[in-house]
Image 1 (tube, rainbow, N blue to C red):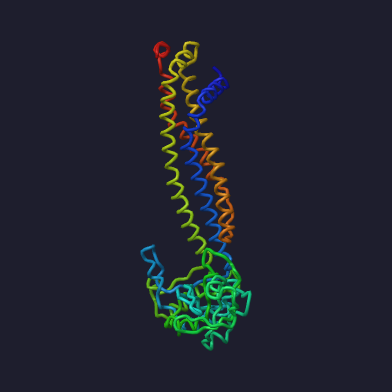
Image 2 (tube, rainbow, N blue to C red):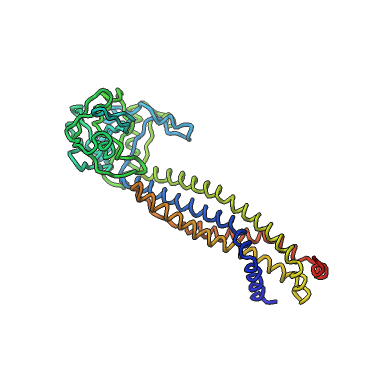
Length: 412
């Protein structure tokens, strides 16, 4: 019997039981669709997050207080008071960090803002005039912070679009005063609506001079971050070394393992978050893949039932000259065709749902969420579904091929 004839026979066998065949591959369809959906959305989230980080510029370095955490349980080490004004002064000196272009201290915290009986919980950032350029935060109304605002510890604030809507509604906000932590701050700028970003939601935040934040809002004398801009991307490595040496000298640190700060470049952050998001996506895909195993078991059960129902057919074919190999090949092909078809349908549905969800997220939440079709996951889905057909179809196919033609013809 030729392979072509065997394939045609397998197709006819599947067509004879269309409803059963459709239900049989449902587990495969769901499993493959879930994998495509998870991987596609995972890649979309990763692209969004990394795009936000890279948007800060490759020449940006962040100095973070505390010992560098070695894991999730060590995260509390991040919040430390090791970076202070003296460090800012030392790092600004050209002889200490020659390639430094700008440096900006940042302090932050969650606070409540009030205006004429209206209250709103926001994220409050303390920064300098450099924040507008680094984070692309140019007001749509009013002005941003100035160097004089920082030096004079001015009671001024720039608010996000959502903060403006929640506190003022349609009324004008410029020149009005909002109350934060028993301090009246005059609104000098309103940020345009930027939507939810992967790092911050700028619509729900307010910005004040870092000196005002330290003295009147938080009551601290240290920084949560120091953001450094380097003159040239090629100077990143050298600048990291200069900053490290300057801070170690200032903090009397001789053992690198006792550093009370750590430095993070944009490349470091991209690599770290890329690894985390990839690992999370693969974990979710592995969980989704469990349904493929369930689908494979279902296919094996259905194929065993099919072998029993078609016992006379098997006996007749053997009586007409079909070999054990022909019977084995026919039933194995049926299993592979079922799982292969399920894989193709699953890929199509997974891609469709992923596109719709990506479009919905980008539209409803104003996110720069792009649809990403995972070709590697699609190829893996086809290979895995075909392999499942072989693995779980082999036992029923072998059982069919070993049937005695005489006993098969006698089967009732």
